[in-house]
Image 1 (tube, rainbow, N blue to C red):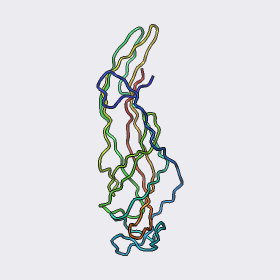
Image 2 (image 1 turned 180 degrees about the vertical axis):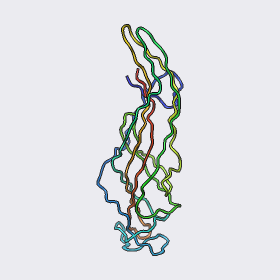
Image 3 (image 1 turned 60 degrees about the vertical axis):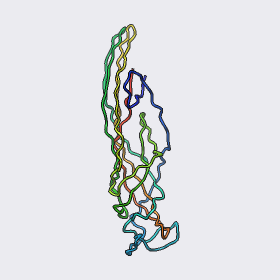
Image 4 (image 1 turned 90 degrees about the horizontal axis):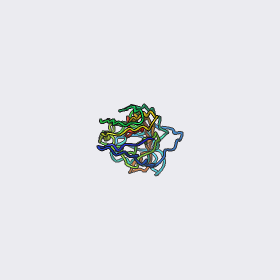
Length: 221
């Protein structure tokens, strides 16, 4: 049996955390525009066709006034690795106790950004792919703020765990009990759709979100 351990667990109780399916990603073939509106020294950095909903000419810079209308995500590429935290073997009839404690750091960043330069005072607010304890990918409902250089402005919380658990074996049984945690490296390409608030014309930029994530610890008894 597998049990999912609450990250702040400090007792012998065992839990299976509910998996929250938020919004599954859909894959699509995307063309990443690297330019759309022509800079002429305007405050908004844009000129060209002022009809709302159409592409501008060429854009040299996304300034603070531009509005991020939509974010498109391609399917995430996920590499995973299992790490055993603690284990024991019990010959039946018998019982024993094993334990584990520790902390795992997580991170997210935007890399390989292409398209118009984004002003240093512009914040990119976007959701991020998340991985459940059983490896399923979904898009978070919550938005996270990244700087124009792709740095996550508020870091992701650490996965912390502490617990002690019983391992029991019946007569004639050999029981191997253990706790493990999954490490995920996630890469997701995205396209940002920007709109000039003055002209209404639009431009695209693109990049890749890279993440190092951890599951909650999982028990096998």
